[in-house]
Length: 241
Image (tube, rainbow, N blue to C red; front, side, top):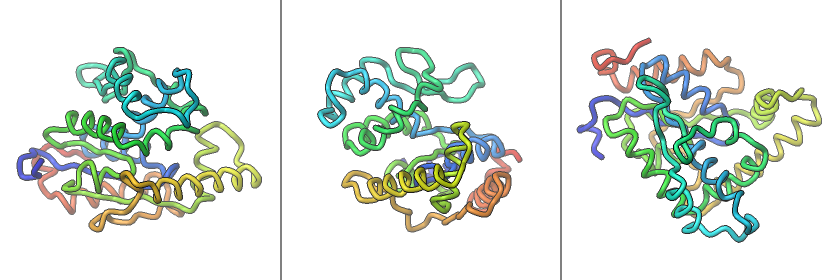
């Protein structure tokens, strides 16, 4: 879709696992008066239903997963007339089930499957025909919306990402736990960056934002400010602040 046909800009936030993309994107969307779309939640939904199959993960077939996702109605829908977009399965929000350990272990495998990515990207594009959205993922600015007006590649040191991930889970981020989690994140980074389909890579025109030493408020403000610099029409099209 040509950006000249959109009424409002698209903000694409990419980056590695546990870099704070989703929480940051939600806050940026709120500040701009935009809709937030969490692409990772869609991959998690497909993974959730894949875990119900009798076959072990290494025998999952992409076409079967997509067929099952369509049959079970994996979709994006508003929870209310003015509510945020939520991931739905069989017409119901799956909420926190997406964040379970089993889903987390296998989501990278599922997200590496080309037909699954095509399915998810179709849902995302259909949900954002007129722009006015903030999306986060690993290839939003390179594959899903390469013509997005605002692109950010969000990073942080592995140890800081590990502390954030453990805190998010309600765990005490002791030194041993941080090291183990950081190692796991680095391994996932390597898998995501080396996969054949839509690898994790910074778009040439994406702004690199290292949040290691930033507060949450600072990183949100940095992206909001960037959006307003890159898309001056925001204030004229309803982008708040």
